[in-house]
Length: 577
Image (cartoon, rainbow, N blue to C red; front, side):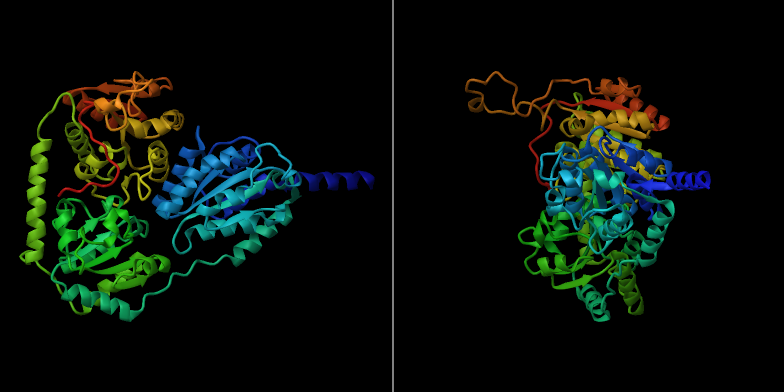
């Protein structure tokens, strides 16, 4: 009998699960398919267990880049991106991604290991009050105190990240909890119980009177404008926007990451006449875009002081902050569907000969002709326009599915926003609401993972590239179809821009704060890991490198040498059209 008893006990022990396994089971059960991060004590086993359960873990060199990847993955998929970090400094590094998710309102969950609970406050290895550290950037922070709390805590942070206005959440996993064990049967029961209680997050339905008022304002407007941003892209509202624009004939203006919801080449696109559009419109329907610095706060002199804003946002707090003429809280896609039904019941359309439409169209065409005249010149040594035109044409030649364009840098991003053409939704990732530099390689990896059918093309300044350049090894390791194009002009804005009076003092012979090594061989970095690198200085060389890279769909760095005097200092969006 003793032998049978010992066997039963051994079998029960074999069927036990620890905290690492239970966290992995909960993530997999609740819909997580990808994780990004940097492993180490105490979370290495968690990453391994998650992979064994079918979750793809993408390992980075730096938690910042991994966090940026997780935040962008949340935007691209509509599901929370998961970042895994070690404790203390790993958590602090991960805050870059969590805060980026907060600023851009993208769903993300940062999961960090932490010290043993009994050692808290005693100076343990990498000890930090991480729940307090993440508080400014987290919608919800959960610290798991016992293994049996894991399923509920995991579900809570996943659900809260996508509820209402999306954002980042945090899950703290003490070392002792990860090492605790329960039986497999108890673990399964805990997971089942949480699954039973999970409910979809309700989104308020708009009041019919608000929809009627919105349509009435648009119908009576002399110069209406539809503005949409990445909130509309996140809501996947492109079909509804297209229908509204085409049945009403109202011109539209996307924010930088709203580009592609409707093609930039659409006849009602007002991007090339932006100053006229926002300066003269009398009613603006703003969908999934905040009236922040990107839209000049909705204030004069950029906007007419008499403009009436109809603001559609998932956040009631956002509408209360902006105080529009009319605010409608809810999901952008559903609200646009309701607006379209209201318009259908009593149709109106401006028509191509409407004075407002003609004014926008004429201005956009005139500015387009001027831009194309500049782009048509082959300037060598390269300015920013010549290589950007060649890149634009190569991307357009790919066809559908369009590549995802990742853009960061000062001049590189500013010029690219005007020159590169977006024709499909969610195919542009840039510095976003915060103007964050360093997002490039993380965003590339997120896009390649979230949209494996698409080529990913990063157009980066050399300064922006430098923040995350080591992640080119990650591209090679996972063999991701990412082409990184570095505009190499020798520094921030273009090297040494100091005036003679600024070149003084005991360190006057040091490099300028904006200077990098001239003609740096960035392409050799990826070659060190087995990837392909090109250095180009002429149109023919760039065209050849792009053709080979796009066809191969392998990790590539193209080092484009730019005249260091071609750029200028840039910090805010400068729209001159």
